[in-house]
Image 1: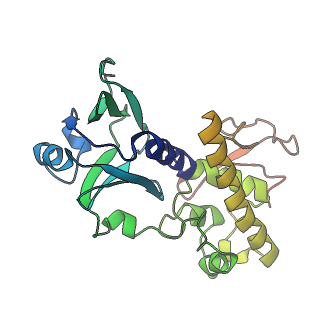
Image 2 (image 1 turned 90 degrees about the vertical axis):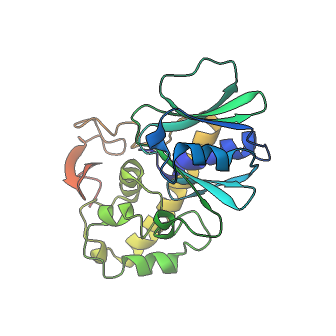
Length: 261
C-alpha cells in the first residue's frame, strides 16, 4: 500500500502537471470508485472546476478545486494517476478519467480498492479529520513525539502504524525506521529510553524526507533495509546476520534480532 513518501510524490506530480488547469469533462468507468455521490452527480459537480492545488494528508490526496470543493483520493494498494494525451488507448484498469484540454488524467487501479470523495472544502472529511500529526510538519516536534509515546503500552511498531497518532507511516517504512534506529519492533513503546526516543524521532523524519526526495527524483524507494526487506534469512545490511520475520501489530515485520534490541 502506498505510504507517505509515495503519496507525497503523487501530490507533487499532480500539483506540477494539473495545478491551475480546468476540468472540462469526467468519465467514471468504475462506479464503486466514487463513494461520495452517484456517478452522474459526481461528473456534474466536478466538470468545470479548476484545480487550485494538490495537498497530502497522511495517505490521502487532497485535490483542492474552485467552487469550494475538494476531491479526496485514497490510492489504497495499486491506485495511481497518469497524465496522457487524449488519444492514448485506455488502460483496462482505468477507473476514472479527468479531462484537461487535450490531455486526460487517468486514475488506474488494478485491485479496485482506491476511492474518491468529492466534499465541501469547508467541511473536513471525517477520515482525514481523525488523522494524527504529520511527521514532516513543523508541529511534529520532539516534545510532541515524547508525549505521544509516553504511557503507551503497545509495541513501538504498532504505535508507528497508528494513523490517529502519526499520519502516513505504513508497514514498510516503519520497518526501515526501526532498523535504522536499532530498535526492536516488539519493544513496548513506554520502555524506550529518552535517548532512544530522540534518535527514533530524528530517524522518522530523516527516512521519510529522504524517501520523498528520492521517489520524486528517481521514482524508486530508498533505504538500506528496504533493499533486502521481503526476503527472510537475507543478511542484515549492517551486521550480516540473517533477517527474521514476525507478526507484530497484525503485520508481517522484518527485523534484525542482533542489531535491533
